[in-house]
Image (cartoon, rainbow over all chains, first blue to last red; front, side, top):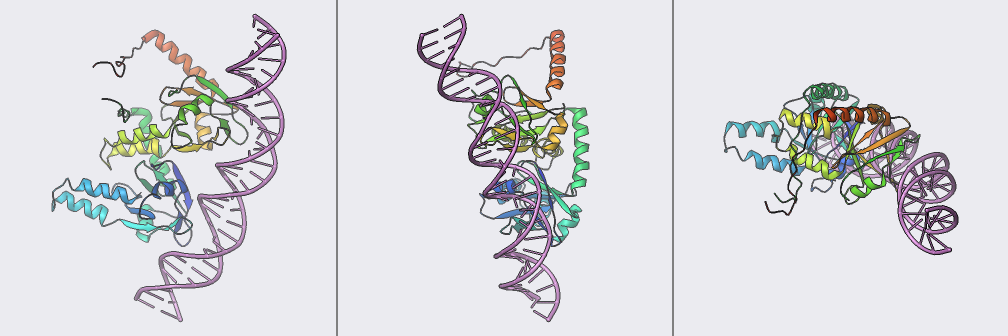
Length: 155
Length: 155
DNA sequence: TGGGTAAATATGGGCGTCAATGGTATTGAC
DNA sequence: GTCAATACCATTGACGCCCATATTTACCCA
């Protein structure tokens, strides 16, 4: 089970703690760092979450830009400089940093939204609104996804 | 047996459980995750079902979009964020989540409709109506499907 | 070809376990 | 000493596991 799937809404207690969904923990558990990497999304009012492996993939991909290039600078500032390692406690909870709570507009509850290789953390109502918008658009545009052939198939 | 074929109508008990047809289970049994992945169709009033391998294919295919691109966002919200991992119990039953029951308009029974690589879950009457519609359209339009050469055949 | 038997599937309900949650105690930094 | 982070413990409610039963399908043999 290697993907982040489904959406879970968990409570944020008064200390700022929130349980990471058990299935997300399972996905992350095979990694060296026991916790999640989180940074503020630069496209939406939410937090991005992932494992260390994905961070390394991002890093590799960023190498495609030249060192000292403006793109490289921006990516570094937006992601690597902002990323924090949130270790979970024995019960599987992480402590959400203040600025992250603020950026996502979190209050009582937090929605963990699976995105396949990564996930996001939203204020539940805000996500609901965003999702409704996307669904309405999908109903009209009927997006399609070109399926890659099954791995292992001859060309 | 690697395909989802035929249509089965099973009862939904008062706990919201329903037996996954034995032949569908056989198709899914060779997968790491013992259960089905289900998400709300974004074009019809039904649930889409598949195995984890198909989800991984979707994930791989979605990688063709750049990370943080709008297309990637939409696909994620519509599929990965909505997908639930429904493990089956020792008897081969899954527990249908409330909002999925609602979306598909399920009540006493659920129809498992094979679609080859995937399947769908319908309210039986609703499916009957949809099928009649598709059949009527086919009679008029005569759809065709370009056949791929058999695997192993000379190019 | 038909009946009888056995196996597999589908269904219903009780109970234990674990994830989520809330609170308290302990540790360590400033 | 104060504050904050984290470990520890206790509660509860959903869901996964088990058993028991019904119904269908498959199989065998007369």
